[in-house]
Length: 296
Ligand SMILES: Cc1cc2nc3c(=O)[nH]c(=O)nc-3n(C[C@H](O)[C@H](O)[C@H](O)COP(=O)(O)OP(=O)(O)OC[C@H]3O[C@@H](n4cnc5c(N)ncnc54)[C@H](O)[C@@H]3O)c2cc1C
Image 1 (cartoon, rainbow, N blue to C red):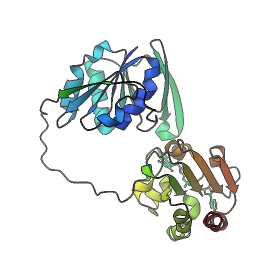
Image 2: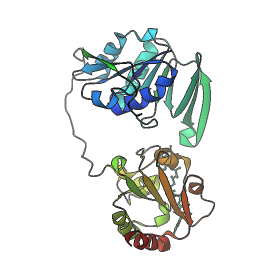
Image 3: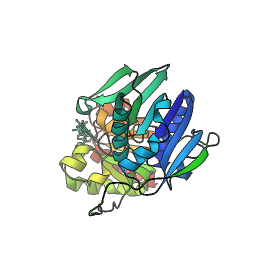
Image 4: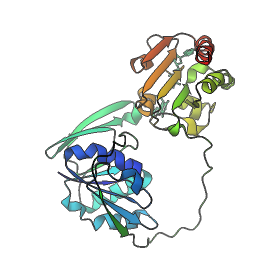
């Protein structure tokens, strides 16, 4: 099987090519500066696009690789990736299956899983879709696996004119990079309770994160700390979930964590199905004990 894979970031491309190499020969496409993240990660060949990337000129560059000759095209579902997927689907008059979180292929057929009904359920589908967009971060970059031939292509100038640029406020934290995350849910009850969690965060030299209600609805933590389907996808070595019920949309963001510790007063909370160590109890009693045990 001949597969084309595009991601504007090298790590995203490495996640795709690492997974796709078991199905055939993979030709990767990414942007200049991202080479080091995806070289030798499963793609036989990688085309690096040089210049200011916009949807129209990236699409043209991918068109010049004759996408019609590939059996399937995988795209990392970033804002640029989603534009390219739509343009390719229209141009090739083919079907795209989008926001996939898991897939397997056999012959011309592909089985995919993706969230449905606004994230309340997972839908499994079987199709012959040629184009597939994959949610960022669902596949890890593999260990080095063979050589990749690197080729550079200059992007044509874009027809898009940028009139004004408003910089997004820079984030002061990056929970995606943290080795240890202490994550709080609605179970902490109020914003002031975050203070009672901080000694644990400091004792484990970790970062603080939270569920959607905590970050988005009540704003007890900033939005950049939200873990989950509509938040950040994290893969720390240790994820400590305090007063988080463990709904599927939260799990979607922390499933890749190596060790999960959960504290919840409800013994039937779904988070206990996902954790390695579970403590049934009131987090306000458990956290101080855990903190002093770690310190000593
Ligand atoms: C399209 C969509 C996208 C979504 N995206 C996200 C997302 O990205 N991230 C996300 O987190 N959610 C997301 N959600 C929301 C998700 O469905 C849940 O509503 C949410 O994860 C619940 O957050 P929670 O676990 O903090 O709160 P709850 O579900 O209310 O759980 C609170 C838990 O705290 C426990 N508790 C209470 N008091 C204590 C105590 N003193 N000690 C110990 N335990 C206690 C309770 O037993 C309970 O299990 C999304 C939903 C939709 C529809």
